[in-house]
Length: 131
Image 1 (cartoon, one colour):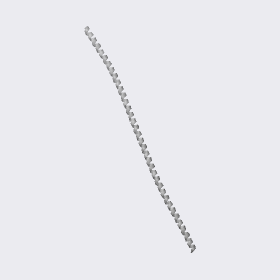
Image 2 (cartoon, helix red, strand yellow; image 1 turned 30 degrees about the vertical axis):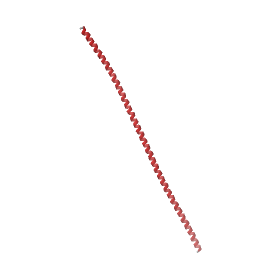
Image 3 (cartoon, one colour; image 1 turned 90 degrees about the vertical axis):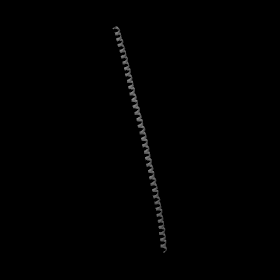
Image 4 (spheres, one colour; image 1 turned 180 degrees about the vertical axis):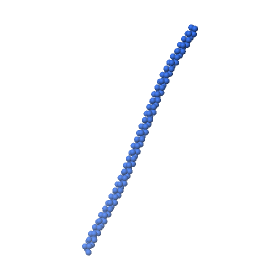
């Protein structure tokens, strides 16, 4: 019986040792799982931040590009407007020049007719005196 008590005590100590060992392993496993979970969470946060930064950068690029295109379109429209205004101004200038030339021709023609009429009147007056 003494021997079986010793055996029982040895068995009990062994079981307690395994139990303590298992408990320690469970604590280590729990701690390891906790650290892995925290790392996974940090990784996920970083990936989310990186994705958000990438989207923000892409939005800024597209916004800048759209602004540049709008500015270019505005400049093109201004230039087309200026070109059209220049064309209108040139046309008005040409028409004004033509009207001035025609007016000058008409003035010269009228002066010539007045001169001819005056000469004829003087000649008729001389003829009338002579008769």
